[in-house]
Length: 464
Image (cartoon, rainbow, N blue to C red):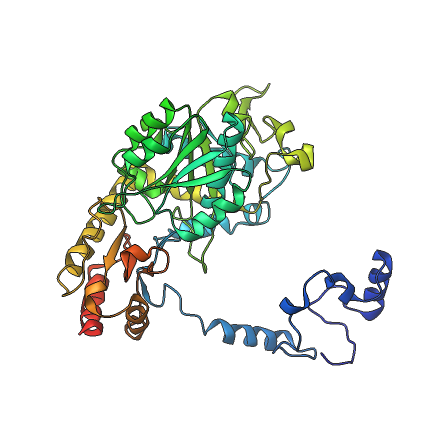
C-alpha cells in the first residue's frame, strides 16, 4: 500500500487521526497488533491487486462488474449439480416479497415493533408443521446440516446418551460438519446396502444399544434414494430407547409420506429449495421440528414463535419469547446452542413459496421432477458404458451415474462438458471410492426435454 495516507471514501473511520484515536482507545499502537495471534504462515504478505488510490464510484462499479462477468452461473449453463443446493424455479413473487424493506432490513427485531415479521415466520412454521406432520417447529437456523447437528445435540441432552448412528453414505461435507457439532459425542456410521445405498437394517440392529442417543437418516438420502424401511428403522430405534431423527427434502413431501407418520421424533430440513436462488451455494436456511414433548421442546436451540388472542376481540398477538429463559439472549455462555438471525429473511421467502404452491401445486411439482428424473435416467442408459442402475433404490431428483466402463474419469468428463455449456453431476469418486468414477446427477422441474437431450448428445460426443 502507498505510504500516502488518505481518507478512503468507501471505508468508514479511515481518516488517520480517527484511526489513531481508535487504536489508542483499545490500547494498541498499530493495527498489526490486532492480528498478532494469527500464525505468520497463513497470513497474506503483499499487496492486493486492487486500486491503491481513491477512485470514483463509477470506476469501482465497473471494476466489480468486470470481475463478476467472469463467473458462469447455473442460469448461463445447464446444470445437473445438486448435493445440497438445488436449481429449482423461483417464482417472481418470492423475490418481490423478500426485497421489501420491512422484511429485507428487519430480519430480527422486537416483537412489539415487528409484528409483520413475527406473523410471517409463524405462518411459515405452521405450514412446515403441516407438511412434516410434526407438532412444534422452531425458528429458522443457519442451514439444514446445522439443524441436523442441533438435533443430535438435542438427542444427547434428552437421553443423556453419547452414541449417534448415521448412514455411511451421508456425504463428506455433511459428515464433517456433524462431527464438529458432535465433538462431545460418538458419531458412528451404519453400513448401507451396496446394491441400493439404503441403510442396512441388520447392521443397524447390531449397533443399537442402551447408549445410543438417536438414529439419523436422510430421506431421500444423499445419493437420491428414497428410504423404504423408515418405519422399521423408527421401530428399532425406539425399541432401543433411542430417538429417531429424520432429515428431509421439503419439496419431496408432495409425494413422499411425511416423517411424522412413520415415527420421527425430530425432523430437520434445509428450505433452500423453497423459493431461493442458488447464489454461489446459498441462500440456505434450516428448520428443526419435533413432537409436542416437554423434554424435546426444552432442549430446542431456537426460538419458538407463538400466537395468542389479545383483549381486543378478533385480534392475535405473535411472540418469540416462548421458553425465553433457555435462550442465549438470556443465559449467554450457559445456553444450549446459538442461532443466527439473517435466516429469518429466507424463512419468510419459504413461507411465500409454500403459500403460493399449496398442497396440490407441490404434488404436481413432484410429479414433474419424477418424470424428468426418469426420462434423464432412461436416456443416459442408452449411452454405451454408462450405468444408471448402479443403485436400485427409487430416486427423487438425484441419482448415481456410473462412468467406470467409459474409460474416462468424472473430472475429465465434466471438464469437457463445459465446452457444451453444461455443468455435469457432482464427482463423488473421492467421497465414495467404492463407486469408482461415478457422479451424482440432479434433475428438477426446470430441466426441459431439450436440455436433457442436449446432455445425452454431448455425453455421447465426449465419450466417443
